[in-house]
Image (cartoon, rainbow, N blue to C red; front, side, top):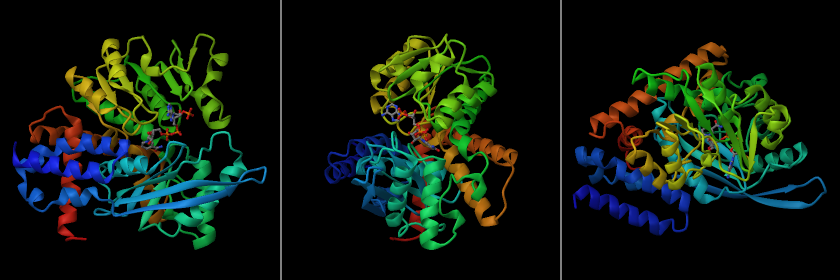
Length: 449
Ligand code: NDP
């Protein structure tokens, strides 16, 4: 066994002991660690300085009680989190997720991935993530407002425009960001740059709503262009029907491909004429309705209650998972192979299990991992911070072009780094090595802090 392999195994063992039972977090670390082997073989000084073990330890984890009152006057409580994982290249940056599945394990895995994603954008932002096991689904606006106010009353002690800048994620959209911003302002005065994903009327950025979905499709566009191919005429399967899914579908259609599916946690829709984006926006963004209502406006479409979109038996060429972690298991990945899928690019964070990623690799499916392919959201969040500091709004075209350029650079960085470390085509290794190299270089230059 090489010295590097021995070192990496010893670190893995320690991480497993210290974080036992945290399955999502351990999964993300298991995926990451082996991929940096070629980098450490080439740069043994990084191993001698033990910088990996230091990086793996989050700088700070905050957990807090969030008491709130429902519309009937009942007292309730949820758990809030913020993981400030790494600030070597900038203030902590990463979304807040409100979903019943949020736990220390989930926010740690998301925070860890965020370090490398943020580094790949080329912008000066460190890695963080947070959220709560509060479920906004089925709650009234007033309940969501009271919850957000209570959540921010505690979180505001730890964040600030140059310190830690949260944004949205699952269950946290414009409504929640508005309430969180109002609560922060009441306690600290007006600090435009403390949150991103703000509404446009108080210094949100154009394209932030579209950014993750559009960015994902730009990433695939550059991957296809690298092989003299394009989206034109491509059959695409998408999961999710939230912020990322909606704008990914919209951009695929703009570029000449067709998306046939979308889903939520209750089932999925197959529309043989292609998903009607205007209808989807009306259902999800305006009415906050369930996807099961889609076929009543599109009689040719079918809603498959209780089924995963990844069991679809139609044929597709490109798959864009945009819902949540671990939605594609190895069996479902095998189904994608059977359907003829050639490219999987992740809008969601860690939607493919490790076994599913192995299936992609064994069958030559090109794989764009979330930390590269969905970085467009945080990239435009960083552009929102830049506009807030400048006190100048940029135009839609300006931000959109910048986003496209950033996604091109991320793709090229992953591709070229994979080539440099003798794993050509392996964009996962390319993303991990490029992110790791930049962040650890910064950490080493700042000394043991
Ligand atoms: P939304 O809350 O807007 O939408 C989430 C979608 O995924 C909904 O359709 C939801 O269905 C579905 N979903 C959530 N949990 C499950 C589950 N357990 N099983 C099946 N479906 C589920 O979130 P976003 O679109 O913002 O986020 C989607 C993914 O993209 C997440 O992994 C997030 O971390 C990632 N991401 C988001 C970014 C952003 O800018 N928003 C940036 C980068 C990554 P239902 O309504 O039934 O819950």
